[in-house]
Length: 154
Ligand SMILES: CC(C)(COP(=O)(O)OP(=O)(O)OC[C@H]1O[C@@H](n2cnc3c(N)ncnc32)[C@H](O)[C@@H]1OP(=O)(O)O)[C@@H](O)C(=O)NCCC(=O)NCCS
Image 1 (cartoon, rainbow, N blue to C red):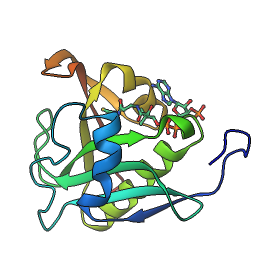
Image 2: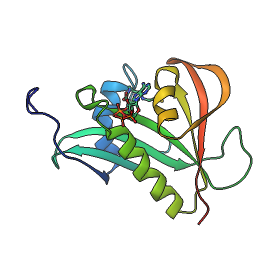
Image 3: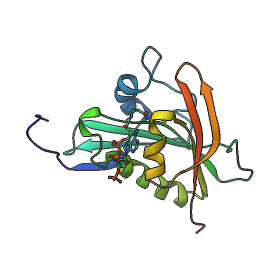
C-alpha cells in the first residue's frame, strides 16, 4: 500500500494461528514469542483482516474460557487483537471483532471478555464492551482493565 493510495478494501476471514504471528509479533509481543497458549486448540478461532485480499493488516483470536468476572458457561476470551498502524481508525479492528462476535454466538457463546490494555480501553468501549474492573497490572505489558460484552441469546 502506498501512502497516497488511500485505504483499500478490508475483508475478514478465518485463518490459521500461524497466519496471525507476524502482526502479533510486530504490535503485541515485542521480545516474546508470538505463540500463545491454546492457539492450536480445536475451538480457537483466529480471524484476520486482509487489505485488498492480500496483506494481513489485523488479527484477533477468540476461544472458550470462563470469564473471571461473570459466572456461567458460554464465555469466550478475546486475545491477540491488533491492527497495522497504517490502517488504524479505518474500521479494521471493529470489523474483526464484529465478525468474531457473530461466529462466537453461532457457536453458542453468550459473552466475550478480554484483558484490555489501558490504551485500548476506548476502542473496546466504542465497539460496545463495558469496563467491569478496576485497573490491574499484567506483566510484562502493564495496566489493563477487565471488559466484556454480552451477546444476544439465540
Ligand atoms: C486497539 C486497536 C486494535 C484498534 O484498531 P483500529 O483498527 O484502529 O480500530 P477501528 O478503526 O475499527 O476503531 C473503531 C472505533 O474505535 C475508535 N478507536 C480506535 N482505537 C481507539 C483507542 N485506542 N481509543 C479510543 N478510541 C479508539 C476509532 O476511532 C473508531 O471510532 P469510530 O466508531 O468513531 O469510527 C489498534 O489501535 C491496535 O492494534 N493497537 C495496538 C495493539 C493493542 O493495544 N491491542 C489491544 C490489546 S488489548
